[in-house]
Picture 1 (cartoon, one colour):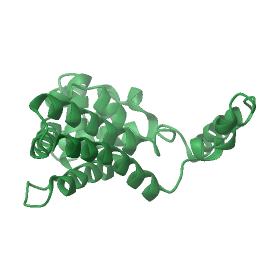
Picture 2 (cartoon, rainbow, N blue to C red):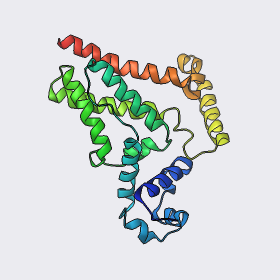
Picture 3 (cartoon, rainbow, N blue to C red):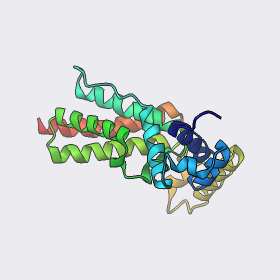
Picture 4 (tube, rainbow, N blue to C red):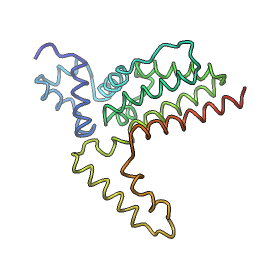
Length: 218
């Protein structure tokens, strides 16, 4: 193969993480699959912690946040959240990667975070409120992106379907007199729903709360 690049390393690491989970991502495994010695990888990433930061940076760097413009802050914030969700959705291991790193060490995440802070300030929130809003907002986007895919990370299609079946039966077998709503909605609870509806409802739920709070401060 040609000159080994950090990009090639993290791309292969993400492929392994998506298929088998992050525990399967090791320097030795990557070196073997890329046809190099472990020392060649250490030139780019001294340990797995640095590798995970590189994976997180690569994940979010593929999301090109639009620069601030003249549209209302609500529209820009929606673009930011929906774009981040679409980007993270492409990798089942994304949530686990981001949760295992110091997000302040991921330069591409800092860019998204800074934009969220600026939009919260544009909405009229204080610096303290903007910090909390940006954190809740970005964590919500990560959770929304993960939910439809996390059961499939590291599992075959058959294994994922079996997990869903067991979870559904577990809820349906609960005492209906004590948990009537869980029993009634066991199907959509674990089997999921239309991805477009899932995403739009989740984003609406989060953003409507921020918008309502902004109106109350006006």
